[in-house]
Amino acid sequence: MNVLLVYAHPESRSLNGSLKDFAIQRLERAGHTVRVSDLYAMNWKATLDADDNTARQPGARFDPSMDSRQAFENGTQSADIAREQDKLRWADGVILQFPLWWFSMPAILKGWIERVYAYGFAYGVGEHSDTHWGDRYGEGMLAGKRAMLVVTAGGWASHYEPRGINGPIDDILFPIQHGILFYPGFDVLPSHVIYRTSRIDEAGFSKACDALGQRLDDLWTADPVPFRRQNAGDYLIPELTLKPGLAPGRSGFDIHVERD
Figure 1: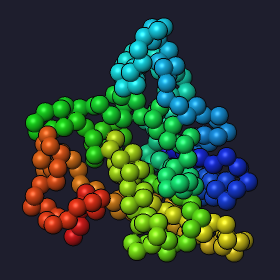
Figure 2 (figure 1 turned 180 degrees about the vertical axis):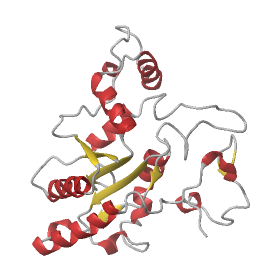
Figure 3 (figure 1 turned 180 degrees about the horizontal axis):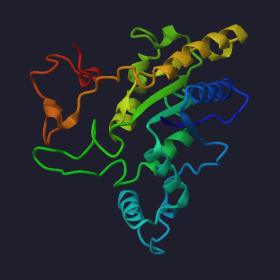
Figure 4 (figure 1 turned 135 degrees about the vertical axis):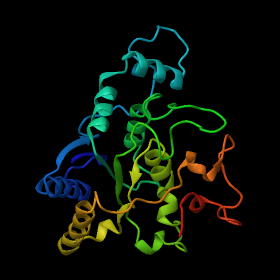
């Protein structure tokens, strides 16, 4: 299988850097082909701006969505965007690896999403009608591929439990898992989170590698998070609200996951 590892940490000698190297070796030993987008090493431009469309008219008003659509349709995207889209087309599985900074991903990775997820590539695709509201949330250009987050966090695991001060980790990562990965069609695996990173010694690193290695070994067999598909009958269209008979009396992120 082909695996794209999108990596966002500025220090190659960090825990994240060591885990990245381990992941590449583990995947390659299992017979997979791995490509890495090391965003800091690539000096990735994080800001979506008018320069992303190489054919736009000087002085024209910049419209992020429409400029993105025009550039994607006409083949005038900047070369770095097109290369990353080609990597996503090539990949059977995608891993986003990053430290949890201020309850989200580093800005450089968010910028990778904003620029690479072009209109016509990751959003704005498919029929929009009273019965089908675009190819998204379980459908889309990246359907049939698998994706997983590998995240490091400085806090204790208990800080991210349902009654923890930081809030449940699944809630914190929901906008990434559901909104960034599931939206364009990925089958999203449960996140792999490594906690209390500043206290990991040599023995702890060995345990962390063992746990990560198991998740990588299971990349193609593990059950994905059972997010509800938008156009499969659970939502009113075009309102895009969950039908009244489903998850009655409940609200929040969890209602968008099918529970037995």
